[in-house]
Length: 297
Image (cartoon, rainbow, N blue to C red; front, side, top):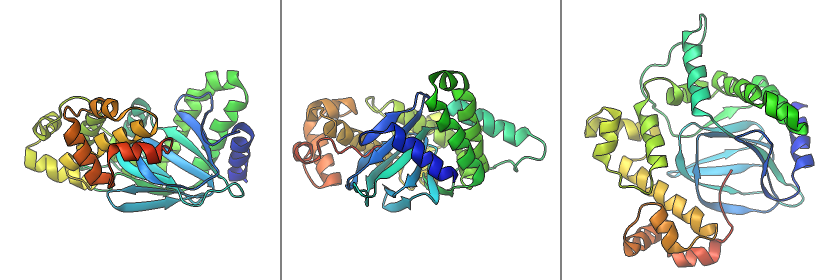
């Protein structure tokens, strides 16, 4: 019943495909009524919940398909391909995109570790793919309903939005992906901090030695731990982040040269070579064939 209420809230407040703001920072609803093949995207720390239809994300060859039985949890920025394989006018996809606030998630993770009788402390670094699917449980569903209902009244959203979003964040940390998320947001996770730095500095030179130094690790140890956390080697991750961001910019209408410069390439020919190697087509042909096809939430 709660999921039907979420679906109704989205139906009532979305009149076109794409993302719709809720009035609560970091929380957006979305609708899709046509099939969108998997295209490059970058998932920032977020949870994506589907209440009707299904969605897919591909990370380094690993395919995740999720619907109203499981939501997607991505606690670190990840270069993916995302699409809506079955959406149609007769069977629209409805969902919610929730940005995970670093400060809130870290505070809650630490409070849970320190609270008497809470979940056991998570030790060690991340040892999982950068994405996890988690079962919709009662705590997550109820918290999401309470959050989205605030959008019916702007005053309620302004006054209670942060508190309800914190409640939902707590439900995520208690859920099936909770330990996975706490590994990313808990104290001492140097890999997650390194990924956050890369995500915010794509237009600047990035070296693996610098990433390792920032993480306080030798290059060899950093490489091993990074691959455990993301399935990708650091240099592959940085290249994927840059090219996926560029592909999204080009699909959104930016020129090829502007997109290349915006993600840190100084050589247009190198950008074109690496883009074609990853996506099988030149940036200019990509621009012609994918304008508007952005694989967001």
